[in-house]
Length: 141
Image 1 (spheres, rainbow, N blue to C red):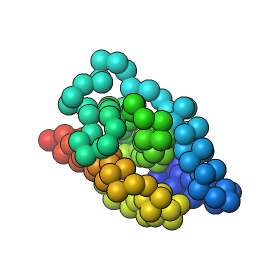
Image 2: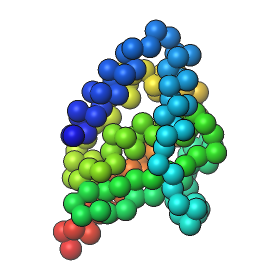
Image 3: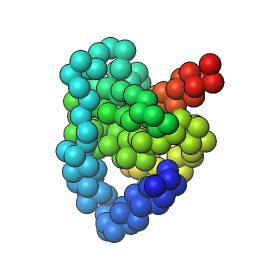
Image 4: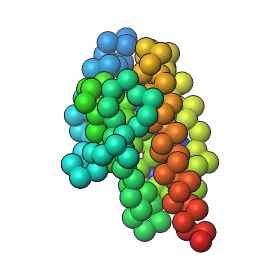
């Protein structure tokens, strides 16, 4: 599945809910199913700067694609990173770099987060793109 197809699937899922309380519950549920990062990767190097809570993100190259795992000490944040991992994990670096993140606005996520959580969301996306940039640069060398 392409990143865009996954993003459209997420948009469809969020449109099924009538209000934001239901959407928050759904985000929390997504976090409970997040493929967790190995304890050995819960280091300061993998900690995303700019997040209100602790969020660890690890990316590994698997053939042509990047596989992301993550964890957070906050249930809502764990759900947010789960959404991003669903959209960007198991994708090629170049596709991650070229992908837009408009689906975040389409589901209304950013506008329903506190300013510090919204900043954290931007930092999460930036870190995912940085992994893609690093793996893409490696491939060219």
